[in-house]
Length: 165
Image 1: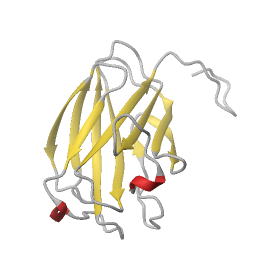
Image 2 (image 1 turned 180 degrees about the vertical axis):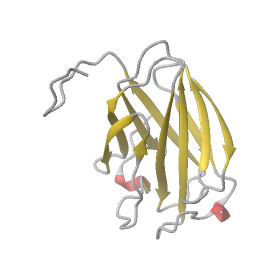
Image 3 (image 1 turned 135 degrees about the vertical axis):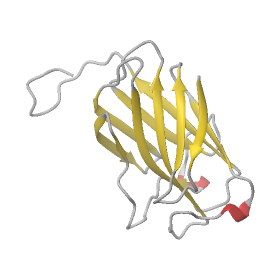
């Protein structure tokens, strides 16, 4: 579960949506609703819809996060296939970097579904992780579900490091 509040922004690259979420569960969902088709594209892609989001996730889950997945979906119960038109700026030559302040690595997944996998970091209970992302859609979407999965309790060794994360 999470509680989200939009703080500011016009959803453009230079003035993004800023969303603060108090994350208390294992799979919170951010629901983004658009007022109408005239909302348009705020980021300059060739798609009819596009927004930039800065997401602040406050960790009140009771455990440390060692990774974080962000997965936009057109339908909450199904991963986003190519046919739904939803993406993380896929195919956009000027797509800005997707990033986080607490996770040093992000893997952008464009196929067979859309997701961002953040890792190589940690967010302690009570701390805030910041994520920057772009959402685009080639067809009108009245709402987008952003499924989030904090990774907890994993053991790993990063290549070329001598420490265990």
